[in-house]
Image (tube, rainbow, N blue to C red; front, side):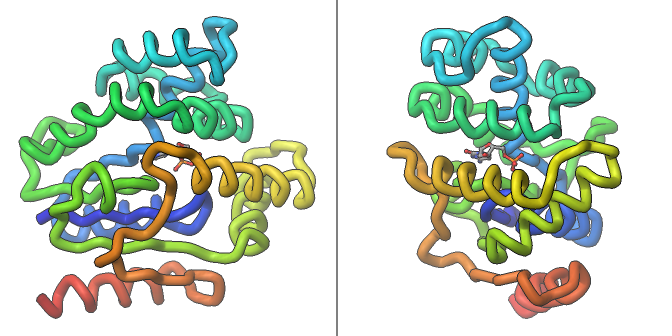
Length: 217
Ligand code: DC
C-alpha cells in the first residue's frame, strides 16, 4: 500500500504521516529531508543553495545514509535549513537527480531498523503528483499561513529559537510562494487527492478522517 501526504510547510503532514505509518505498518519517507540535506550541505560547503552547479553535484551524490547523517546537524530543521531546502528544491535538475531515489524506496520499503515494510507513506510536496502518481491513497493537507506560522512559531519557542511570529509568518509565505510557483513540480494537490484543511482540526481529528478513508476501501 502506498499513501502520499502532500501539502505546505507546517500543515501537519509529518505528524500525520508518522501516525499512519505506525497504524498500517508502513515505512515512512519524509521527502523534504533530501532537499534539506542538499541545501544544508551546500551551506556547509560555503555555496549558495541557488547555485545550480553546486547544488546539482551535491544532489547527484546524495544517498539515503548521507541524508540520515546530515539530519543530525542542528541546522537541519532550522529556519535557515528550511529556506536552503526550498531554494535547492526549486532547481529542476536537482529535483530530477533526486527523483529515482524517492521512487526506489517504494520498491523495497524498509523501516529504519532494516525490517521490510508492507508499503510506504510519503510526505512531501509532489509525492502524489510526481513520485508516486500510482499511490493507493493521496491526501493534500493544508491550513492557512497564519495557523501554520503559529504552529512553527510554537515549535521554535520550545526549541528556544528567538524568532518573532511576524518573522515566521513572512518566512512561511515566502516558502509557500517559492514552492508553489516553481516551474518544476510545483506544490499542488493531485487531481485525485483528498484535500483536508487542518486550520480548525486537531491532530486526532485529521488522523481519524484519514483512517476512515483508508479503512473504507
Ligand atoms: O517538508 P519540509 O519543510 O521539510 O521541506 C523542505 C523544503 O523542501 C520545502 O520548502 C519544499 C521542498 N520539498 C519539495 O520541493 N518537494 C518535496 N517532495 C519535499 C520538500
